[in-house]
Image 1 (cartoon, rainbow, N blue to C red):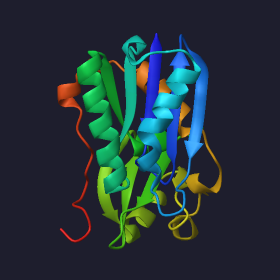
Image 2: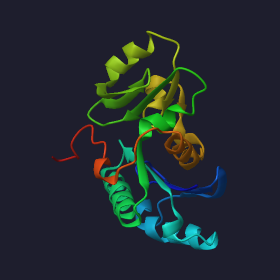
Image 3: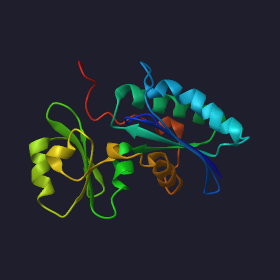
Length: 201
């Protein structure tokens, strides 16, 4: 089975190509000059497929981060995944960025990402909880022994580790989750996870 995974929802772009469980390519792309990393998505996908002598028609599964995260990044990710899956007639699995980040914890993960407006996108007990006031997140943290995964902005407030502190292989985690999903992978059902409207709306 050939899996192509990509994520432009977070602060960096992650792309991964796997064949029968073996990683053929894994790249992390950061913003360059005035260009947001999602601008490099198509060219990066073309490169890793070409370098491994794989054509788009060979792809069996597309794995994509559906958010929450950058609104531009989420739209880019989901749109490209839907178009590819439709044209190639292959499975596509969407995974929340919160679930992906939860895999950085060995046990009992709590993921909190900056949602602006004094709120955090919260994931705990295996569920996306929505955009929660930071003060309420602090109260939830006190109720159990969580392994806290957050970002650079919220780490000083909530503790734990920031996923932005290292180049974690989030693309590889995304690919693994999708490969083990029992979702039917229909492109019609792939939708972005917008927990709250874009800024200014």
